[in-house]
Length: 246
Ligand code: CA
Image 1 (cartoon, rainbow, N blue to C red):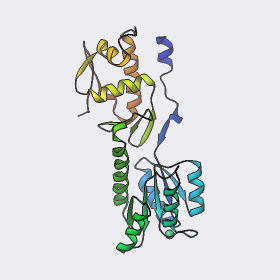
Image 2 (cartoon, rainbow, N blue to C red):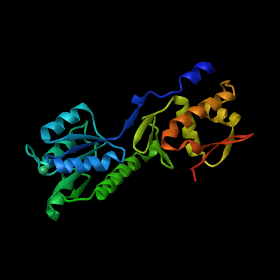
Image 3 (tube, rainbow, N blue to C red):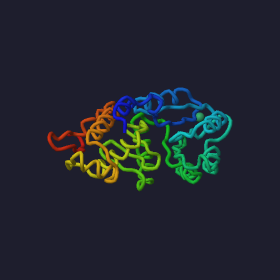
Image 4 (tube, protein in one colour):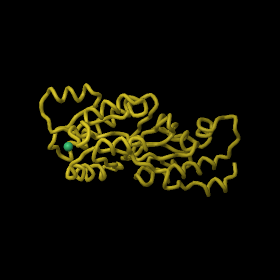
């Protein structure tokens, strides 16, 4: 491995940082604005649609992580749109929270029957909305639990090969990924560089011990914007340890 070249390529291009996207389908601007205000500060990317037609167009472009769906839309009922989204193979996995002014139990049941994951009754507070969304996101992350590792505020997606921190999707290099996977499953213990080489790189490869330091450095840079760089601790004279910061 060319160490020099290795060091020079450590910077992540900004386009590799991806926020989780939420689509709000709602014709009332004050509600869209309130949702935008609430979720933008939670670190989500918000995409808006003011009717069913726009929602369908948005969905054709890129799948969001979650949809907030108004019940009463000008061109189509939110309920009908939910049914369509859940029927479509490409969009059926996307969780949907219905926004409804209807408070009758019967309507709520109808909403959930149509495939909505949750509902929230208008008027709702910013805090309530945030909490509902977090719960749904946790559920999604939990369902795919076998393919995800969680440690502190880090979520490592073993299928997609990225890290999620504070709702940002961060692409990581293959070695940083393996290193992080090892650390997240072997936390609180000190490992020497030689041990890390054995575990992460494999015993068969000859890699210099200082290569470990290069990748540790990269890993810290990746964690730094989230104030998590101190999770990777240097234990002087021995090696490294991965901990949840106190
Ligand atoms: Ca409406």
